[in-house]
Image (cartoon, rainbow, N blue to C red; front, side, top):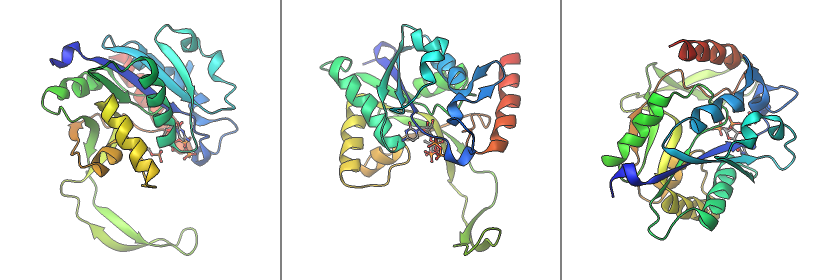
Length: 244
Ligand SMILES: Nc1ccn([C@@H]2O[C@H](COP(=O)(O)OP(=O)(O)OP(=O)(O)O)[C@@H](O)[C@H]2O)c(=O)n1
Ligand SMILES: C[C@](O)(CO)[C@H](O)COP(=O)(O)O
């Protein structure tokens, strides 16, 4: 079926606590300019014409989401997330299968981290258009530019040492969104988690099932806000994106 006719549901894992950020509140609710990180992320998905629904996976004790204006948007619905990111994504997929994925299963899941607020419409378009030559699904990714080192396991802080240089040929940074047929992603993610497989992104569940997801080159400013110094960078990137 022509990809233009297939429906796309965005899934936003937003149930983390942001431990590495070390803030007093979950990092997705930190301010970035005029809005929270999560609000910026939701705006980028809500505003895309080919995204019909946005399912946000929230921490069971989340007390912030209801205060976002985006919480009341017609496209937005919520589910309770799980202990790990993958569990939160699966919770959203399970919610979808109840009332969204039709018999032919031609609904696509576009999974995007709440912590990546600098996503552009152009990159969403690029990923959606990749379905015609990547019917198995694809992810936004960025080729590695630096020489990559693997460290010796450090015995104490600030004592890391190089163990080896890792060949960077064909090495990419996996970004999000990651785009897969709903039904296949749900089945593969559930099976992988059931087997205790370490799943840190949707592609790794699909790879576990023998799929080779497409790699779609994405913008370098689509960063995941993880550590405190990422906040200023995200502010700069967002201002740049909004100025064009
Ligand atoms: N149980 C979890 C853990 C993470 N996430 C989400 O997955 C995304 C990427 O995870 P990460 O950057 O690691 O966020 P946190 O888990 O919050 O960060 P940390 O690991 O520092 O605690 C985030 O938007 C986070 O909210 C989630 O939905 N459910
Ligand atoms: C999904 C992801 O953003 C791709 O790079 C990354 O795997 C998330 O990792 P995290 O440890 O859950 O932040």
